[in-house]
Image (tube, rainbow over all chains, first blue to last red; front, side, top):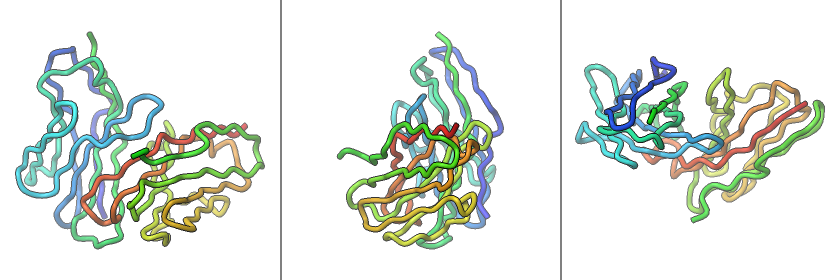
Length: 116
Length: 115
């Protein structure tokens, strides 16, 4: 079975400060990992993914995430937060070895609030 | 590309009525997913299709829910009869191959309110 844990319900940061949104995962084999963002009254938008290779993945809007296999983590980061980054963030995982027909498992989501 | 298209965007209906939600995936994608999002339960996968064939419907709440994908460019999610607890935002997403490393593209959602 595969699962994702997003341990915080909300993350609050000041504009201009660095932000980290945490995610840990559990899979039997090797993971594909994803981050999505959801703005109010919108669908989820893809931010970035880890498939293989470099552990530091860069994505849209200046976000990046670091894959840490030993800690089974894939935390989302940004060096300098913007008020417009305020949204709901989802981490998702799929086990690479589960075959052609398998689903993505999403975490419960974390609300990021950036204050001016 | 127009992205994933869902209709209607908003639906308000009375308990007991039939509700049909529609989705047009991105052209060329061969996997389609239906999700439901509520405050209490978060984002739940209801069912997904690969090459128009239902692969996993274990997330469908009960027999009142049914989904079809008659061709590669259209899918429906039907609730009959609807109940107030079905009120949620329903998302459709598509991608190339459900088991691939490709990301899913989400539609804007249908906000369903059952009174």
